[in-house]
Image (tube, rainbow, N blue to C red; front, top):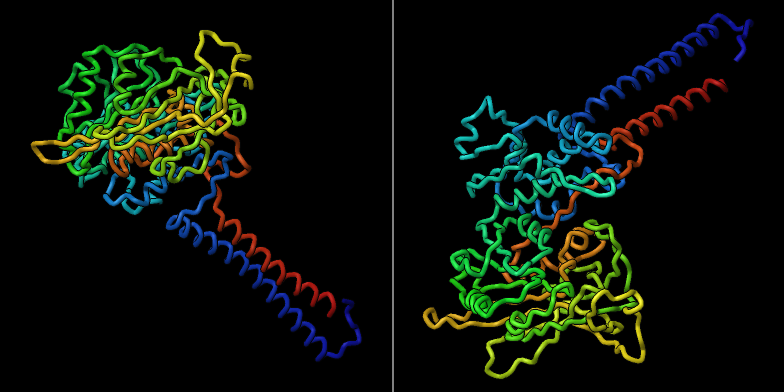
Length: 517
């Protein structure tokens, strides 16, 4: 606006006063903006400390706890301490040196904090073992040189050590896996359980393929061990179940007698009110086992040595143990107790799946009922087992192959009446026709619900809520979506942009008013 040289003295004074007021307002706005930004930054930092709100922008969401863990933490009703015996800075440096660029910055730090954040029953702190040795001795805790954390529950007076080896997991094809979440969650389950029960895996018949199932039980607070049938003293009141996984050698008559003795000796299972439970995993890698098959027949389950094929549902899966591709078989569970909560598909290795015939229960038999728990679609068909079959062998032949649903998993319930106690006990035999159904690839995959099925089956047969979770290893080689790896302060970003926008609008209005004065 051009200066009016003919303005009267009063008008000139008024114009100067107006400019002074506008300049003062502009200065106050600038000062106010700076002060507001500083104040907001202070308040948001306090707010974030009290209510942490970070966004995990890794593509695999490695900084967030899994849904399974979060759901479990919501049920924890005992005070649990996560006691770090090494500083997080030390652990971060150790893992960075060990894993290199694959390690995501502050992964362990953020993971441990999440437990404290997600549950008001769980606390996290660092205790220096050198400075405070009595803290550990008073709790009867003896740590090892590789210990990084102690998970402790005063109510149960139980603790579990987590070592650096518990955190690390082996991966293939340049993947970087960490088991930190599995280790911590499993330890919390262990220290919170009212009673620790035993799961025993049978050996002595070349049993194989039970490694992941064993870890599945350990992760849910069970004591897991191996046993032979001759070790009858190992089967105590605390034995929840016996597992026979893919035996390659038949049972002797004496073995069968010992197995029957195990099943018919309920031992007073306390509040569970159940007899003995046996889990049997078979597949077509197992040879014909006449004596053992005869034992299963007494439970109205007859294994059939045949390949089960279903071209209508076939796909492929990569097995991490061998990097080999195998055709897979989709199955469903018609049994309500095992199918509850299953939303994804169940899957088996097609050519390695064994089927079963279920016999009718005769009058006077002690079998309460026998139910199919895993079945194929109506498009499935079978082929006789042969040595070194070619791929062409498994193709459907309309002239010889008949399509029909096949049972590839069964559950038999048998009752035993204790004359002395005048009480009836129920024992279970669950048979699954594929060792890879409970293997690492299918049980740990988030694409399949095999672990949910096993959780439901186990809870049905040895007591509700015996199995809580299945936490899989975390792949830290996943990429980033763009922000800092440790997350971004969402509300800080939003608030600062909003504040800038507000002051920007104010400044624009003042500029327009001054422009057209």
